[in-house]
Image 1: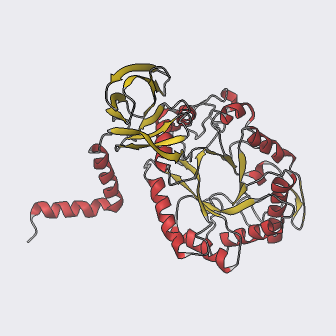
Image 2: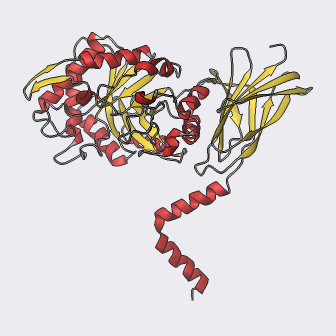
Image 3: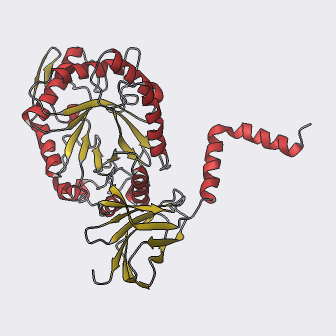
Length: 459
């Protein structure tokens, strides 16, 4: 016979459901998490510092959007690629009527110039359907699939041919499962969208090296992965990368995604040696969220980027700049690193977080002892000093801790520890030791970042 307490417990579990149980487990995991005890081996160089955060994306905020006045500040983040969608409905590339189309890349060239001026290369989401050839709105199939094929061919020939830009990525569509209700079967079949795009890419002549992929789905789904992989293999289609988006407060999810897709690819040995995996948009919320206007998003972005090292090569921070709030507010929870131009295009905390993160030097050092909240990277710089970037990320905004940081394998002597917080506050510690170890403690408030540099006296 089941006891009364046990019966009540089981009833409660049935009532709250599996999803609620997951939330409860996450709550107690956070409440009873492990605090950090960081240990940096100053002589254990792991190799070059991976920088998965050097990838930025822009969505459909303003017609014919330009980097404009924020170009120098974007360049200061050292972006490797900038992803752009809405190219066909925002930059008036395709003119004419179905079966009789022409192309004008003059407006698109302006944003390409901006991307290059920022020191980046273009990563182009081939979206959405040009109004001139669409059977409905911009998320609908074309009237004539050969018009879509020709559009892709001419786009690649212009960017990778006429403009001679090397190593451009072309991503077929943007969130097809959301924008247009595309599936991998039926009337609105994404596989058709991809097939004709791939044929257009094959027809491109006089072009530099480039890559083609997709589908930039709203999250990681194995059924989409399997469908596109099988379709590409069966039809001998060009397929260079698989992409998806991920918005979550759980920074461990980004690596979980990568672990999963690395397992799935093992079923397709024809693709496994060369297929790349990209998170072509990421953030903490796919909807407007006030956290994008304050330090919460900075902490989430930096902690997420740190956890991506070294598993994830390309993850595109979404997005560069806010659109204009219909209600006329300067800050409205939009995703941008910068506010709208009408309000001065001011950098938001997430921009400063990325800039601080990218200061970390190129020789990655071994660091252990990360906790449930505090994440960190360590590196040796050109002056042979040790740097540490650390962030205390708490989705609830409550947790703070005193973080021990131990530097091992140092030369005995006198040292200065320079400390800079995300809010700009700076301080120093003077430490002397006759051993090969120095230990300090750094107070970390919730969702704060700190950059440390250990400098030996005389350097």
